[in-house]
Image (cartoon, rainbow, N blue to C red; front, side, top):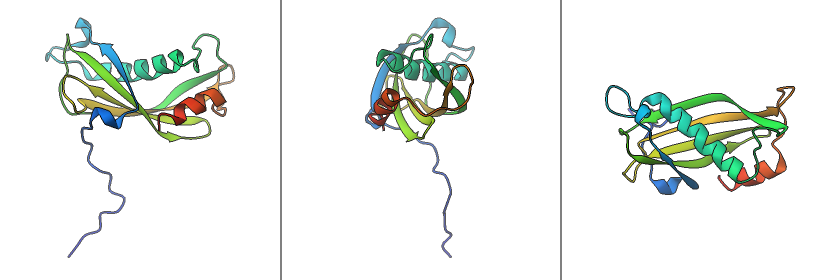
Length: 150
């Protein structure tokens, strides 16, 4: 008897650097390591934010101080495949998996010295008006940039 495997999520797996549109270099810090001698899991979430927001700022589509639209994280997840430790320099790969009217799902791969992701995860930003915190459509310049990351 053959069992149907519909709607069963695929098991998370490592991916190559080529699976990501943009790669950003991030140095590890002494304080990133935990007592087990590798970068602590919570640091990866900081790398996700750093990679995406720094890229958006460099591209001129995010003004964290005076922009009228800001992104709020509403969901995040990470899967780990290999250890990374100080003083390694890592690369964060960025791509966009889903682009909505006011939201975007970013997927980030963290690479150590190997070709495959040491970890990968995602977070969803909902873009809101800075003052009202109500969702707003993605600004045109942001949407155009995000489309290149799909």
